[in-house]
Image 1 (tube, rainbow, N blue to C red):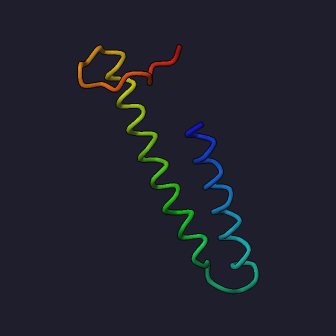
Image 2: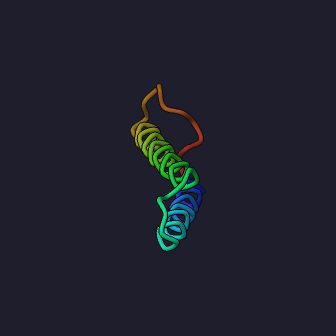
Image 3: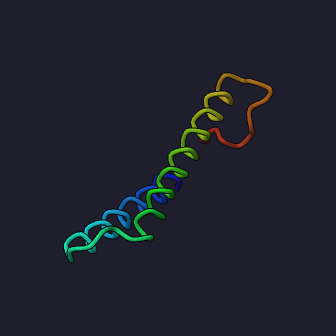
Length: 69
């Protein structure tokens, strides 16, 4: 689910970049919002992967429920 959301930000970001550029203007606010969305998505994926690795190692500080069934 995380990767689907991240992919959606990327797709919308590419469209938000190409449409204004092909029309002869600079990318607008929507493009920069998508860039921020991709950044937050990458951070979320990194946190998820770190927590899952900690759960697999059996760390007591790891969140429960991130291990695939």
